Image 1: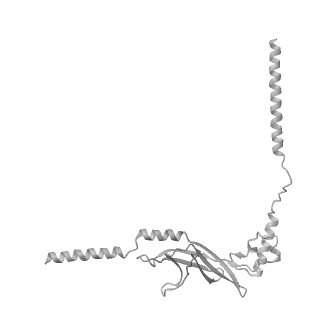
Image 2: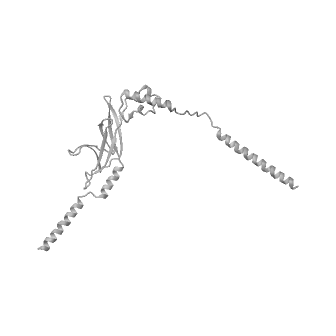
Image 3: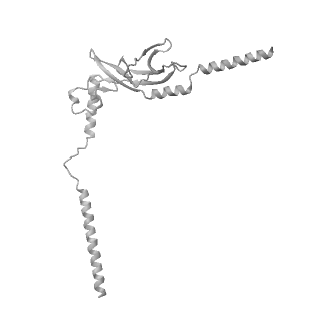
Length: 217
């Protein structure tokens, strides 16, 4: 009787080990999914709605074994899901300027890795600059706040102050003007000097040889 109990115990232990192994996400499969996630590319776009900028985020190279989610409330399992299409690009919109968006990439497979988080990506959206087409920006397109998309939201007063500071800095550190028509002759002078020195050396050597020959006579 004891032998039978022992054999049953061994069988149950082996069955538990096999079930546990079968119900785990294998590292080989997880690594494959991570490699697919590395191929994902992220960008953003915007449109004006009632003179307000609304941003959208695109995920390119999305494989069918992956799903891209934006989890709003983890415990309540509320999320927005990117929809894949034939172009393998997923898009979701209605983001505010300056918003920091965390994108969660999960496995969407028919094994125990399904639903597992593969990677995450944080995207900081820029602000739409309503001052970029100011008349004063013409000729000063290199000023960072004369760009269409900027790193912070500016009022008209803040923009004017930063622009004045930019102009003052330009006056202190003027940009050197390069005249393409002006030729630097320094290299020619150096080459000419070297040639002249070689000619003089040749004449001196000839003179020395000639004097020696004359003395021998």
